[in-house]
Image (cartoon, rainbow, N blue to C red; front, top):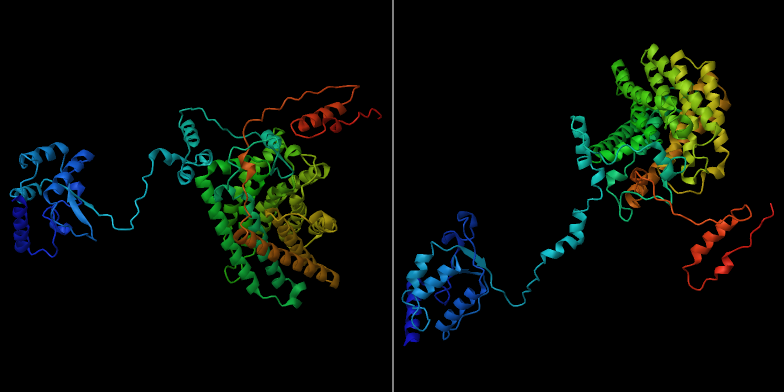
Length: 594
C-alpha cells in the first residue's frame, strides 16, 4: 500500500511541476540562483557543516528503504544535497516525521522541505563520474618536509637580509636602546685568516662559510661590487674614440664622432643597469654590502661607480653637451674625497688596515679617481681643485707603488685567475699624464715622465705572455681593458705633440689592441652571463664565519731534532682507515743528512 502511495505521489509531483527528468522527490534540478544562501557561507557565519558520518549513513538508509522500488537514473551532472545544520536538529526532525517503522512519512515530506529550506545552508557536492580519481588527502604533518615548503622556509640567508633581526638590533642601538648584536664588522685579520690569494677570494681548506655551499645563492648575493669594472672598460672606450676623432695625429684615420656617441650611450645604459642591480643589493642584502666594504680588497671597488661617471663626463659627445656645469664636478668628487679620507687614513694610522698589510694592485682604483677627477676639473676651467686632487693622488701613488714593488701582502704565488689585475699598474701613470697635460694646457715634461712610466710598465707586462694565458674566464679579465685604453689615449696625446710615424703607429696599435680586447671580453661576458650562466658564482668572500675554526690537534713526535717524523705520522693517520693499504710503505726512512 505504501509503495502505491509513493508512486502516485511522484506522478502528481511530476505533473504539477513538469520536471524535465524523472528524479526522486529528495533530489531536484535547481539553479544555484534560485536557492537562498546557496554556497554563500558569509551570510551565516555561525554555520558549521555536519561532519558526523553516522548521521549521513542513517539518512541514506532511511531514504533507500523508502524508495527501494524506484529506479534512479545515473546523473552526469552535479546535484546539491542539503545537510542539516547540526546532528541534533537532524535527529529530532527525522524522529518527528517518522512512523513506528522508522520510515519517513511522504505526506509531510514536501512541507518539511519547504520549511527547512530557509534554515539550511547548501554545499554543492558533485557526484563522482566513471573514471574519476580521488586524490589522497595531503597529510598536514608532512608539509614541513616538502621540498617546495623547505625552499620557502629556508632561513639560512636571513642573516644577510636588510630587514633581519640583526639589523633591527643595530637600529635599536642607534635609538639608544642597546641590544646584543651577534655579528659585528669582521676584523681585517679574519679576512686574511679565512681567505687566500692577493685578491682574497679563495676560501682556505680549513675554513667554513655561514651560507649554504650546496646550492646557488640568490642573484643579488652573487653580484659583486667588482662588476663595475665592466663599466670602467666601456666608458674609457668612449674617451678613446673621442680622442681618435679630435687628435691631429690621427686625422688620417677619418674617425667619425658617431662611434663615440654609440659607445657613450652603451656605457651609460650599462652603468644604469649595474648601478640599479647593486642598489637592490644594498636594499635587500645590506649585510653582504657591508662585508664587501670591510673587505680589504673589495673596498677599493667602491671608487669605481664614481670613476665611471667622471669618464662619461669626459667622453660626452659634442652633440649631447658642449660644456658641463662646474657643480657636477663637485658633486662627483665629494664621494671620492670621503672614501679617500677613510682609506688613506687607515693606511696612515698603522692599524689593522695599514698599507703594508692590505697593499694590492686593486688599490690603484683609489688612486685613479684623483687623476681622472683632476682631468675633468681642468677641462671645465677649474684651477685649484684639480691641482689639489692631483697632488693627493701623486703622493699616495708613490707610496703604493713602492709598497707593491717590495712584496705582496700574502707573500704567496699569484693565482692564474688574478693575473690581469697587474695591468692596473699601467692605469695610474697613464691617467696622471693626461691629467697633468690638461692642467698645464699641453703635454709638457711632467706629462711625458708619467707617460713613459706607464709605457715601460705596459711593455714589461706584455712580454710575459705565459703569465696571462691558460686560466679560466672571470670578471678579473676586465682589468685588462681600462689600463690598455688609458695607455692608448695617452699615446694619442703624446703623438699629437711629438708627431712622427713611430708614435702614430704606436698610438694606432694600442688603440686597436684595447678595442679588440673590449669587444672580445664583452662577447665572452655575455656568453657566460646568459648562455653558460656561470659568470656570477657563489661569492665566498662575503660568507666567511666570524670565528676561527677549532684547530685539529695532532701528535707530533720530534726525534733527532727533525720534523720528518711528524710528516710520517700524518701519512700514517691518513692511510689508517683505508682497507688493503700497506701502512708500513707510507713511512719513509728518515733522512738526517743535511
